[in-house]
Image (cartoon, rainbow, N blue to C red):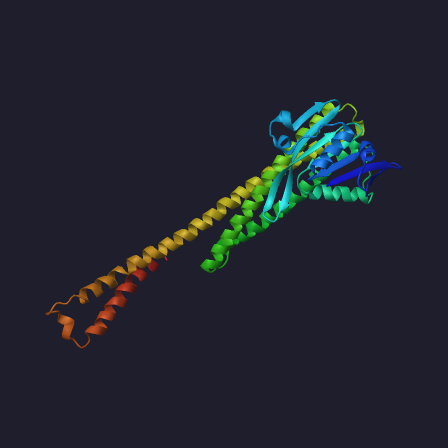
Length: 326
């Protein structure tokens, strides 16, 4: 998909018809989302730039993440794509010059969709490529802040659910096991999300700092906006660490309750095996086919055997109860 924005009467406007070479040459923002080979070739031919491939964008070394060639910044940033299976990382790239911004993505991004929608509705009006870049950085950081707030609320809810187990009435074993399984799954999802957010934060801080240092054509106002973005990222990093610590604590607590549940099961099995030894011994004795067994011809022998079986079962159970083992 190829989205092209040009400046008309001082405000950005999305081209509704397929962009021709002239439109691409005067575009202030070109957004490539899962672009075809033909679309990439058209953009490169119109702008004279060599766009990075997905493999190049995905490389993690710093020299591949940021570069400055021919008065153009090549900035690569890991983005987050929320799918039905959970958060997933996807590479993204910003090719920024004084007069044009080219963004390259390989998956749908809610941040880009919301920002382009705001541009279409003219609630934001970036008049230059640098202003568009700054707006996108601010939108990414705002979206990360919202995601961290949602993660914090989820962790708070999980915390109440987990520690309610130790204070409230005991649930049925199956319901408790299902809740613990669900909690582990939610904690895993949140951990995955925090990991992707952390990668994006590191990327934003790197490319924003590099752009401020290398792009001499950035205005003082844009430099101030990008400095605020860097400050916001640092604040989010502190909040991210706090959430990571809380999540690890909740994970340890969940595993602790799982261990307690397992110990309860083992304790019940141990008590049942110990309490079952005397009745089994009695049954074994009376099950021996000796001719001169005293109770063999006794009229109350059957009842006496049952009395001993029940008595020898209750005595260990009462002893365990007295010791408060059960």
